[in-house]
Image 1 (tube, rainbow, N blue to C red):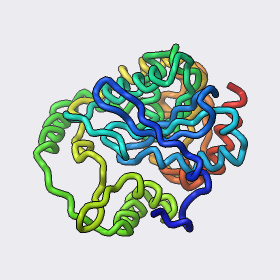
Image 2 (image 1 turned 30 degrees about the vertical axis):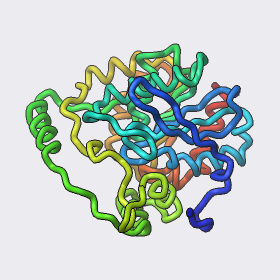
Image 3 (image 1 turned 60 degrees about the vertical axis):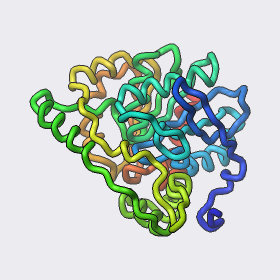
Image 4 (image 1 turned 180 degrees about the vertical axis):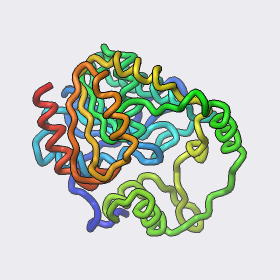
Length: 294
């Protein structure tokens, strides 16, 4: 049972949802009436849909949950979603999200993505403009890339990463919470959200629920020219929210790519890479003002 000292009131109002895909299904958390415009939230690598709970709390306080339906999925292999029967490739994330949007109905959705979720969301918006009415990227500025010169070296590292495997050792849930705190630089309250949804109980404690294959390196990444073409093809209004203490790579990428977006708003807010959890009030207010304009 989640400690009420670290929980958020909105959690008691969240619906658990299952979304069918071609191969399996995804788990999701949702709030808001089904007939409202949909905001689809995509989390970061090795996170899960619970990473948006602080934002949902702020949105509820701002009355946004009476204007939009928020759907926060667990990407395949994450949280409570099913695992794939193969390695995870970036293009497959795009396919998965396309299937989710189609399953949610005929209307375009607003995409809100953090980190990996932001990168995936940018590609979905580019490839399927009819499906996306607005895009919010938190600590993301389009797809990750690799230099052509590093192709062979990266391929070698990716294949070798698949050769490493070991059975997880059960630990106390509090130990997993502490591991998230250290790795992400977030509070116990936020780390508890991720660990509670992202862990499963076994005989001797808890282990992470996510698919170990998520830690494999992707064999290939896009080139910068390919990434820039995708960004040019994003036609919907786009907002990029970066943390003052976020990943420097994201700020550098945005500086290089900002002229490529058709409609871009840039905001920098206090916080690290997970500012949507730690500075959820500031991020929520920024997104609310953006959604009103859209």
